[in-house]
Length: 187
Ligand SMILES: [Cu+2]
Image (cartoon, rainbow, N blue to C red):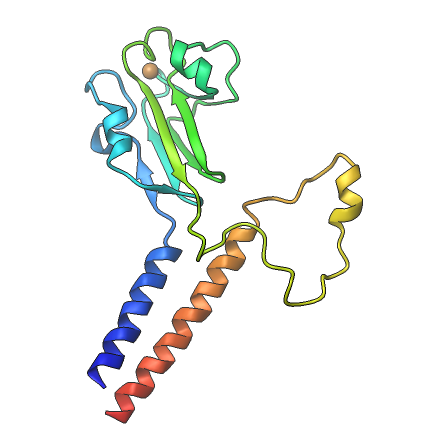
């Protein structure tokens, strides 16, 4: 009986761990800065980023900003055409796709001084698909994506699939808790 309880608890812990979308404060206590000589490459190498995680850039917006850029722009600290620019001093950026994400501070000299961040978001594990739900098991619902495909407009959001994944996991946790409760009663 104890073994079953342990197994159920282990399952719950694994599922809870998977369903947690982590928030990482860039540079930890130092934040996003040039004065603390933070090695952001080292900082990123100590983390494991997943789709759905959030990185938080905290800084004084009088002195810094955040630009998301391409790899060539990142390498050359080229601030001319950022993909996006953030300037609030408290910028949360949710990672919605895998692969490398390149950021630097666009204030002249700061990127060259090392205020730059390259983080790699890992591919979702095959056991926990985070993209489209499988369509093989049931007949596909009347789809609006067929008409939307040819028309420029709101594209199906990748992030929209996340809440359903969370809901599935919450249901799984509840089911396991019920199993655990039953094993408690049985023993
Ligand atoms: Cu800066």
